[in-house]
Length: 280
Image (cartoon, rainbow, N blue to C red; front, side, top):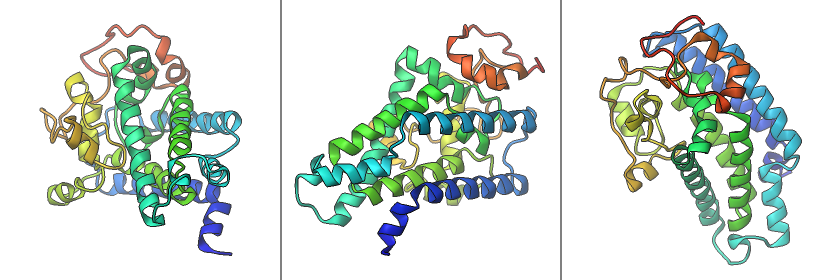
């Protein structure tokens, strides 16, 4: 069996293995070298985030039994999409696939901040009262469904290679956990990494309580789109360690529980407590 055949045959196990191992590495890094002191109970946050992630995985599996990689294989077999209609070197098609998927996710992310109804769905991710590796799996089920639809449309439109899709899935899962990490990174290392991937210090600004900072640094994997389209912000006004994360409307401990995460989009978003976190 070739390497390509092996990867495609075991893509679900590979993606899950990378997700779990990356989560574990980042969790250990957060213990050894945290940047920010937590404001809320990690036990409450993590348990509810993991339950939400499990719910999302089950929902996506039920609604979309054909995984993204399998969809790419189908498109290739049927000659669907740009790269299946024209000749291009495989290396070019592979690289373009990763870049195009990341651009699609960037555009999708920007849209979720721009359309009020979509923002109500996406704000579940932003309403976390701390930011750490577990925030990287805190997404509303409706957003996860829309994300699969957007990625599937991109795969079909461009006829992306299956390995390219698998590479993006692995990269997006692992780097999303990485750039949500509450970890201390050397400023010089961070500046160098920011030219190639979205770093924790870069993405953390996106979780600021101030909307002007929230509406910046939309990139998930590649940092280029923010620089290219003018949405890049180098640092938060209050500094990385002092900036407040979250949303003013959701500042109680009760807002961290699974039922509130699922119903958040229909909850009135008038500020309830802007002075700090309550145990609610």
